[in-house]
Image 1 (tube, rainbow, N blue to C red):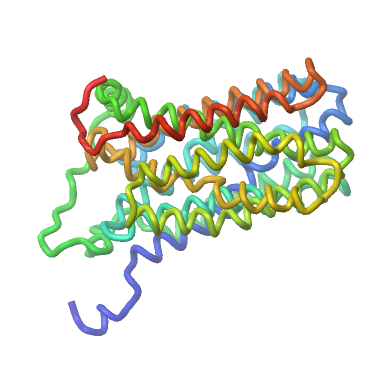
Image 2 (tube, helix red, strand yellow):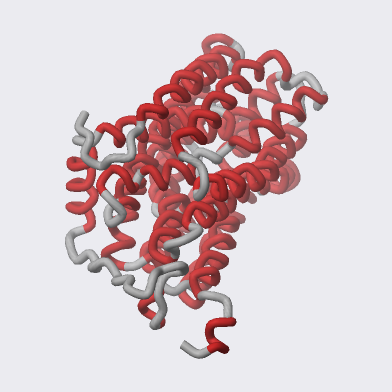
Length: 420
C-alpha cells in the first residue's frame, strides 16, 4: 500500500458514516407511533389500549425480525436487505392514509412497518461494526446506536408539529417519502465488505483472513444459532437483561411519555421536545458507553446503567408532568445519558455466546428479547392507563425490574461454553 493511500481515510469509516446518516434518517419511522397516539384518539375515537396494541405488535416484530435479518445480511448482503426493508416501510406507511378501522393500524403500522424497520436499525449497526472494524468496535457500535436512538427522538417535535398543523396523515406521507428516498442512497454509496474493495477491516492485523461467507439458508442459520445459544448461560443473562432494557425504554418511555405528559396537562409538542432532549443527551451517553466498552469490563458497565435507570424510573411519577420544572429536566438529562448506553457492552458480550462468527445473529436474538420487553410494556402500560387512570404503576414495575437486572448481569462470564 502506498504512503498516499495510507493517509486516506479508511473506507470502514466511510461505511460507518453512511450507516450513521441512514440510521438517523430512518429512525424517524420508529418515532411516529408515539406521536400518532393522541391524534388517532381524536380522529377515530379509538382507545389508547387499541392504539397501544398496534404499537406493541410493531415493537415485537421489530425485534423478532432482527435475527433473520442478520442472517439474511450475511447470506445476501446488507444493501439488498436494507433496500427491501426501506421499500416495505414506505409502502406500509403510505397505505395507512387510507385506514378507517383500528385493525388497519395493527396490520399496516403494526405488522408491515414493524417487519420493515426490524430488518434495519441495531442489527444493521452491529453488522457494519462487526464486518468493517476490528479495533474501536465498541466505539463504532456506540456511534451507530446513538444515531438510531437519537434520530428516533429528535424527530418527535417536528412530527408533533406536523400532525398539529396538517393532521396525522401528513406523518404517514412524510415517513413513506423518507423511506423511498433512502433506497437509492444505500444502493449508490454503501459498500458490502472491505474485501470487496481490496481492503481489510479497520485495525485488522497483517495475517487477518476473512471469515468464510455464509451460503446456508438464512432461516436455518438463525434457528440453529438460537438452539446453540440456548445451551449457553450467558445467552439467558443477555436476553433477560435486554428484555428489561426494551421494557424500560422504547416500550414504556418511548411509547407512553408523550401521552402520560399530556394526561397531566403538558402540551404534546412540549412533551415531544422533552423526549427529543433525551435523544440529545443519549448521543453523549452512548458515545461514552462505546468508548468505555473498549476499556472497561462490559458487565460492570451494564450494572451501572441498569441500576441508575431503575432509580430514575422510581422517581419519575413524583417529579414529572405538571410543568417543565427543573426536576423534569434533571430526569431528562439523566435518563438520556442512559437511554441506549446498554447496547455497546451487550453487543460485545454477545461474542462470548457462540464466538465472533455468530455474534451478530446471537445479538439479533438478544435484540428480539429487547423488543419483546418493549412490546409488553407498550401494550401493558396502555392497559394500566385505561384501568387505573395513570401510568404510575407501570413506571414502578419497570424501575424494580431494572434494579434486579443490574445485579443479574454481574453473573455473565467470559467463557463461551458455560451451560445453563
